[in-house]
Image (cartoon, rainbow, N blue to C red):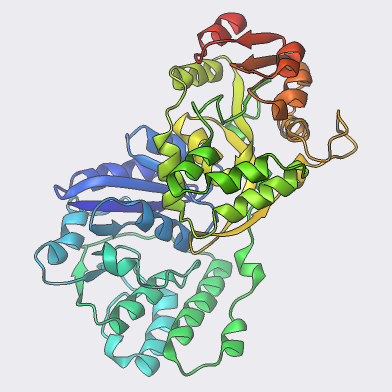
Length: 459
């Protein structure tokens, strides 16, 4: 059977149609949408189709593809674009059949329309000079492909527009059996001149890098930070669709939404519990402890991390409670001292609007052991406490972005790290907490791991 990966960025108008088409192929047993930090309702629309949804840690199609490969469960993986609604009903059958029949290891697609400008003016001329054995492919930049997972894991997945041509060249150089199949007539969205220029540079860089005839300093001319700008976490957190809401519900994650601590679960599974305990018991400031904890995750893939998070049970009635809060006009989110790769995933599972946490850094979807501490956690002129690092600072920042008064904020946590957040919210809730100070400063205490009491207090 086949896993289908659909990278998607701001495709709320088309994502459901694409998923529905993919479902018509009999060989499909898994559909994964990798949301590239969309700011519209792409994720919510995809959820209506009952498919798996993950949010990419770094914006870019290549990163989304790489993470999809790691998360897929089947040995054959197909990719389709999220903005095309003219696929044939059997699109995945066409892409996967040569692999299922053991006639190919990798399949490229072409379609019955004039090839794009970057293909004709950049990709094909360069291939004819540097890789003449690949020059016969009709649309080498096509993103509708299929391949064996074991091979896709071995190629270099570029982070940018060079991803598709890069995979083709890598597959060829690894001796994969490659074939090309027709998908009939497909309409693509026209790109702006700016996007075409960006695409041209990144496609050129991917080809030159693999040619072995161009030095790295030449390749550097085609790349740079300008083309890899990362979207700030707060910008992604503010959803236009709920900007008119006037209430906010903020949850800690560990032992508040999840039954147990994520990082302790990782420590048990991957056998670094002693090192973790040493860090937790140290007298270092919070942000230093976070940096030390991040080093323990070095070498872990996105899939390793998210699979562990999924093994931790959610609080029994969490999803129903979040839905009830949203229906009553609450912006819902997570603020945690964990890592955004996990908090974003859990927020998505519950249909929450945002999550704020430290940014664990990844290189090709593998943790580097480094972490970025977002500035919204740090003490500033708006702070309500003297801590250098505090969740209450993040509460103030996100509430300001949504224009919500603190009196209309519900905050719920479990540990001493939640004291300031709970104390300074309009309604503070201690959830199954054994910290006496947190229980004392909270307005309400929930003593059993269920949210039923919360909704009875609010509604």
